[in-house]
Length: 368
Image (tube, rainbow, N blue to C red):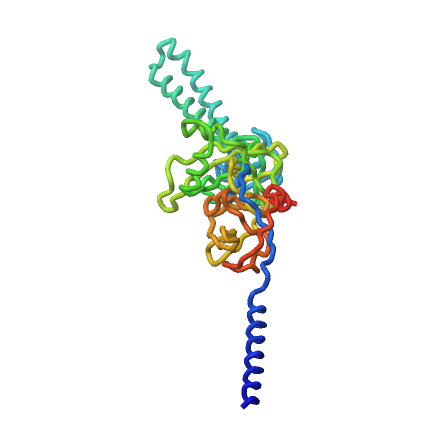
């Protein structure tokens, strides 16, 4: 009987020790993690929009008369002045017609000169002289028409600009009905960047701009940036000049035009880029991007509650240029302490020992 009591006591002791060991393993010590007390500061956001580039003028150069291209005086991409000769069409036939018309003028003038004294001496009626004068006017008009046709065969640039592509070559036959232009001359001393914004973006831009009237707000908007297609910022700042009067019914977007000086003619018509519109924000919450989690379509921040347990809260953010931190539009307040260490490791509900670090120092470290 004593033996049975002894075995039972031993088993009970083993069971107690086992339970004590398990309890010790399931209750790890509370770990320290860095947190920051949320503060507000100032920053500037850059909204980006794809844009297409066009010069002040893009003029298609076309032939006004029929003929074969006899000479091409320019090269693609060449800078030209207003009035500079671009092309010359063959005028041999027109020149011959002009010579014949000039001869007819001479003959008609001789006839008028012959009839004048006869009319003065009342030998013939005025009708014959007036008929001769009308004939002279007719042949002069024909001659002027031919001369104009010859002049039109010399095609000049209507503006200062850059020569576009030259699709036609020497000997090509052209006319006023030819679909493809001889070339295009672009005045790119100033270049316009055209882009679109949706209704919400348009309201955000205008509501964050100074001024009373719509046009006053446009006039006072800050300079905008242009990022070229190779990713390099253009050295000249631009100015937003116009918003379309109404939204596009199909897309719900507004068309916007910004202008950029182009003294070195680096920008060309037909190019593309990205417009950056700065928006200055005052007293907003800024947090490091790497202190947040992305879960499905939501952005999550981890805060510490009053019991020092981790709590996940959804937040609405906008990226700040540089890709290292966010502006928080909703979800956090200055009374929150946010976890900045152990992100992706510490789970919701975990008790921690918060170690408060300086907020501004944390933000600055994310910029480096």
